[in-house]
Amino acid sequence: MDGFGVNSGIIVLAATNRVDILDPAIMRPGRFDRKISVGRPDVKGREEILRVHARNKPLSDDVDLARVAQTTAGFSGADLENLLNEAAILAAKENRPCLNNADLERAFIKVGIGGEKKSKIISEKEKKIAAYHEAGHAILFHVLPDVGPVHTVSVIPTGTGAAGYTMPLPDRDEMFLTRSAILHEIMVSLGGRIAEELTFDEMTTGASQDIKDATERARSMVMKYGMSQSAGLINYSGEEEVFIGRDYGHTREYGEETAAILDREVRGIVEDCYRKAREIIETHRPALEAVAGQLILREKLNQQEFEQIFQEAMNGKE
Ligand code: ZN
Image (cartoon, rainbow, N blue to C red):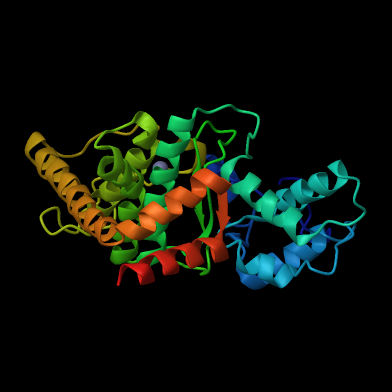
């Protein structure tokens, strides 16, 4: 910064993802006076970002960027750019001059899940297990108020190695999560395993990522968010980890006894969620059967198809 006179009329702009490792000399008063932190865009911001990146891409009439903005809560500017690029690639592959809503839907799944691999061969048995597993997730997404609704549920293997996926529609821009929302997310994560147990009386390794997600959420509730009675309003997770600096030089600042309490709390949350989620899936068993059956036949269901199958199955029960 040295070398600029007071009257030189030059404004220096700089951007970083790593505020934590900046040289303190740069942060001294008189160097960078204004600090603006840029978070993820809200719905209005997303719409405008989409308009910028759609500028040189011909869109067909069925594309509504305002609607796309509503369904992409949590996307960064780069994610939105990526979404439009992927949609344009899909249109170009089929020699269409404009990109349409179906391209955006497929791109949305690709950006969110990592693309579908229709060429991967899976056995009928694997497909059946995946169908019940995903139906278990989908039913909880649909029934629990703080998560979902279901955008797509599929048993087409993904590029990331999953046998299927259930994508919720993010319909809110939230600044923070409530306790019950986190509990509902944990329940949804466990839904796949529960459906497998109920249907096949067996477990598979397919739920490992789900179990990891559930554990991480329960752990954060206890260690970070002060949401457990016995653990209290204490941060046990150490320094707030930043970006790539995750877990760097992380040390534990509590004893064995506290560690045991924390473990018990985390375990208690997961077990409680498991019990509640299992109850819900048991009471919606006809929907589980119907959704899994249709997934085996059609491999992929959109929101409208899923909800119709769910409704009909549950009405038929009465
Ligand atoms: Zn799963």
